[in-house]
Length: 356
Ligand SMILES: *Cc1c(COP(=O)(O)O)cnc(C)c1O
Image (cartoon, rainbow, N blue to C red; front, side, top):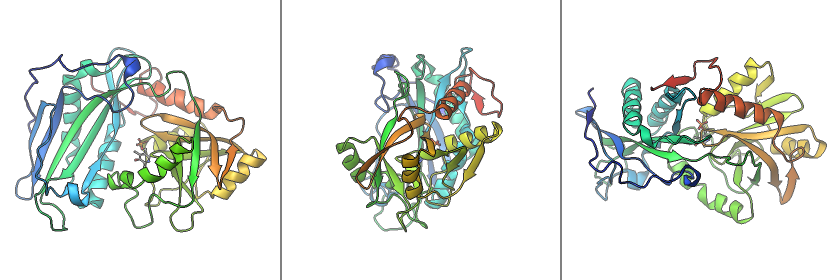
């Protein structure tokens, strides 16, 4: 399918903030990619247009029944002046997995990769250059059919938008304070926890507000059935270094299969660490804080890459992890992953995808 391009006539007029003021998700670029789906024509009319509002009928199904899936990845200025993505095929594969779960049509991976490439290159001057900054890419699919009955939509819109984002740790790592929720849950077995679909996130706001109000950074989610096993932290996967074993909960339908999670597992195994994907109870984690067998705890995700945890609050008690500072392994993983992403380190696994 051909991608038709209509260039914005106002390029250069949109505010482009200083790298130090970027933050996350506050700014978007000059253009966006769109394509439409109908049962008769399937995906059609792939196009890049000036960034702007969408027009939706108030009955558009996404607004009522949440038929929506999305992705998040980044484009980086490489050390040699080129532009790279990190394992984009994994995000597209996951997008199609989420779409299947939500009874939405799959997209052609090659077309979506081409769309990302054309869009990022067209808006390449929006990719910030300071250390740790990048251009966030948000592919999104929504159900657009105007009808109020509950059934899968016959029409969809797929779009990709871009936005410059700041360095997550401008002054180096600052370990997070995590609140363990033993009253609310994120995803139950049989539900949609493994899909990146908007309802999963709206449902967590209430608890995360409560945690933030108490001075914590994020919520740690336990399994919905027994409130016993650790699942994820906020919108990141979670790892524990217990003595010399690196442990992360197994993917079992309730956990988002993170690209960063997979990359950490591959790297750790490559380095010869003892790595397990196994259930880990919150009691064991709390015990590990007290008897010092828990050496490190960190979250993984595209936004922050590696996010060290300094403390958890469980049953009203604040428990420090080791010395509460960033651990050696957390730092090493962060350096290696960002090194590969920005083209500073050898790409042993072929994860870097060069756009230019
Ligand atoms: C996106 C996301 C992650 C992290 O996935 P990455 O591919 O590593 O960015 C983890 N958990 C949840 C709930 C997510 O939405």
